[in-house]
Image 1 (cartoon, rainbow, N blue to C red):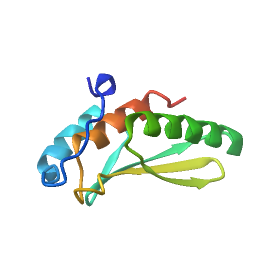
Image 2: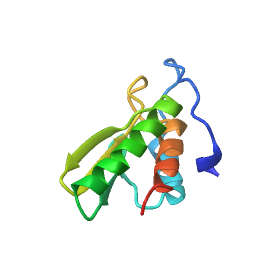
Image 3: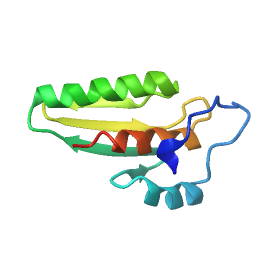
Length: 106
């Protein structure tokens, strides 16, 4: 199960995950979509405070996994984007973090 895995250091010489494999992995991270070489999901909350509490949980997780999403906040909506910048595409780490973030969803 992805949510039980830990992110690992990225070998910059390793190519990104093939898009065919990424498409298969989407079934393990419900709610996320594949956009080019990024996985993304939008979360909606009652208000700004709830959105920020969620963002703080994501920030703590990202620091503990040493894998950080791009975070876009708009009052009661939070859009997260994950990709592995070091390799210019997706890695298993993106899917691990996405699965762990899904555990926070209210």
